[in-house]
Length: 221
Image 1 (cartoon, one colour):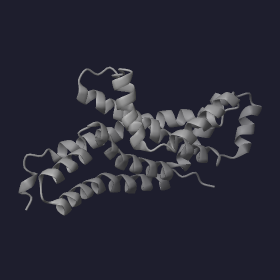
Image 2: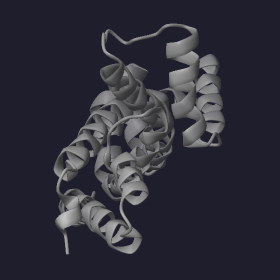
Image 3: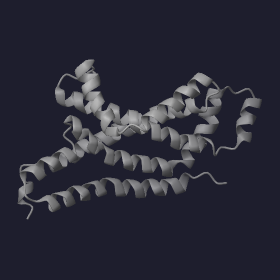
Image 4: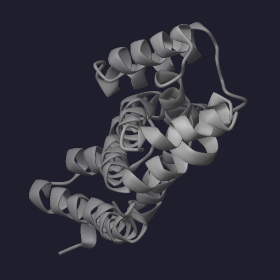
């Protein structure tokens, strides 16, 4: 029944998906945190940049962003991100596109968490002379992260599924292999079920584990 799977590197394709997810998640968390800090910054220029970035990027289809990284950055501007071979270049460009897109949603999730921090704590920090950056780093962000583990989990699950868009620029992840197998084999339903099960195996444990973490670290109010 599964003889047609021979000759296809199914585990390798899902491993690329996992790598895309992990690298993009780390980058999105870092850049999204910076954007969230900009959005609550007392500097109008930084607030404006953060708001403009989020409102523009999250309303652009991810496919457009991923294709732009290949056609715009690589083929037009010759941006290679330090890679030499075409396969690695496309992988890194896909990670860059996923970070640029996902960080907008990370930013909004974090901003909602920042808004849950009692204003009295911020005022107390200012009263003892802490600057904005220290107030944000020592008081606001630790509580904000604890309150948004749940929303960030949803963003991570969405990111895992969004990695399928990387196939648009030839990254050899699960969706590209699925398309190749469907074209070569007369097993549409079975192949689709196999890949759907694979993504469930990636996202369901993540959701359950981070859901448990969210309950453990939630700020008691």
